[in-house]
Image (tube, rainbow, N blue to C red):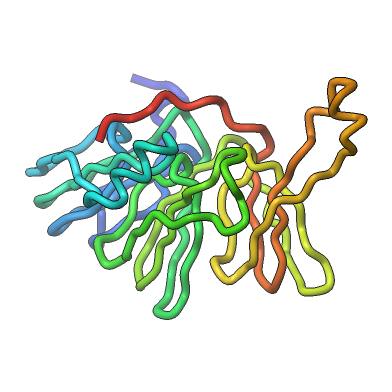
Length: 225
């Protein structure tokens, strides 16, 4: 049987080492030898002896999610085998976090991660009750984090001389060391006349970077978990 469907880049090759790798632009493959964690419902295929279990987040984090509708519903994948993760054909990337480093990521952009990484939901300082990120996910420790983004991400350096302002519905993540606050970019008079649709942004200051997706987020349905 002949078809471009069977091109080499589409074929799943056996893993040569445990851990995650980018299978293609839209999916991550994880060779599990023990356990890993992933977004609930993100498994699209697997082979081997694997079990999938709903993962609790602890009482405090669960309450934060219940209040905000944000957060990340996780599942634990345990056993030995290979599993492919994807979500709505979003582009997938792997971030390697070294000891002493940390990354703040919007829960909706997390796909999977190594069990050696620590995960916590934290308040986005200065963000009040506005926009898509009162609570975001902070990853630290050492290991790999699978991140997804609708479209090609925009990575913008942030410096002490040049703060960056981002739409709260478009932000994917940023350097945890950055300072955050809300910035109002239109006058009260403009808002009373209907506004520009760009009333408030998240201001990031310091040294680091911010990752933005090339579209605003769609409203999410609350996830049970």
